[in-house]
Length: 166
Image (cartoon, rainbow, N blue to C red; front, side, top):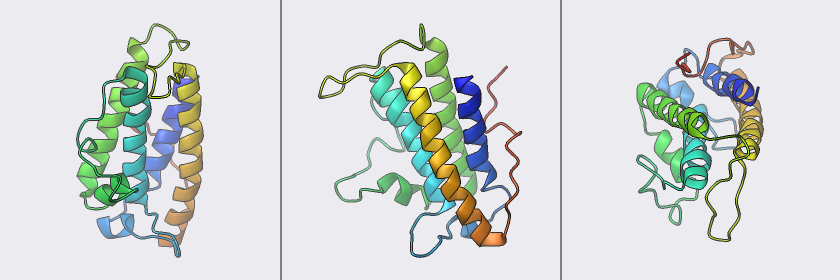
């Protein structure tokens, strides 16, 4: 059930970018700098944060590993805004697939993450619920941005964000 809800929101986020040009993907709703491309890039990064870096302890991989967050606190968003639509989707889909594999490899949803610097650990269940919350919040942002671009308020979340392989 957690995977199904998470996949629903992953698909909903990509849905808000459906059939938009790169220029439209980079349009913001004043006074914010938030765009659909920035949101999708951010969520690709967040997938790595929670599943790869925090849960598995594997550290970040490119395109996020070399970002300088001291120089730009929104570095993952700034980078995403420079990508083509194809690259944006590819990076997002790769992050989602890796997260799904992490969940599949886990012994249970009660399995704990690696300890962070402060010794804090999270269960995989908590991480998945947190990711649902994160996607739900950002899908609300995406709805507003998309409506401001072309008035589209329809959602097509029946299409999966990334094939789960089953």
